[in-house]
Length: 198
Image: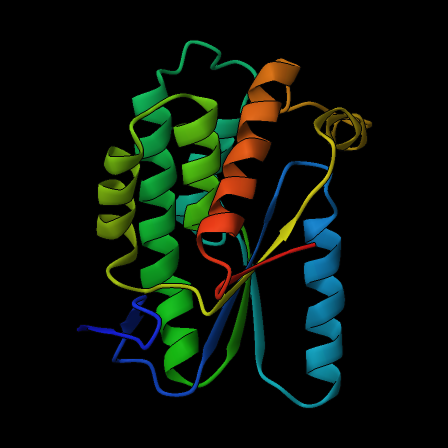
């Protein structure tokens, strides 16, 4: 059951003491590295910490990830892409995130619903209202307590991310990545109480 929090954000009333923190940003921004560093620090003080990623984090999610990021699927329609991300997210929430929060863990996720807004909304040009409805179904009211958006110039981020291999999204042109960055910046501006821009 979702309830309205003081800042107007939807919170999950079934949560006891867990905390959900998402790391967002362009590929190559360092979010995965920073997530692991924070996890190490929090575990060092005795906290129960669960780390995960999107898409992925579950057997179903990893299978979806393989399809989504494969350079072999360049024909994938934007709506199909958005639906696949939402499917992986729904599985992750039910199988990993919600149970961890229920036992009081700190959950650190490498991407969450803001990535869909930035990539499929701003990047692909899908209507943001459609992305919001899809996300609402996928997360079932389970919102993030804090989001850290790691900002980086798109060209630098892609150069870092593609130093070893390039996935389907990383292979998009620089204009796409600039639109995605604009999306993350717009989210940070719209929700300053939840989002911290780094």
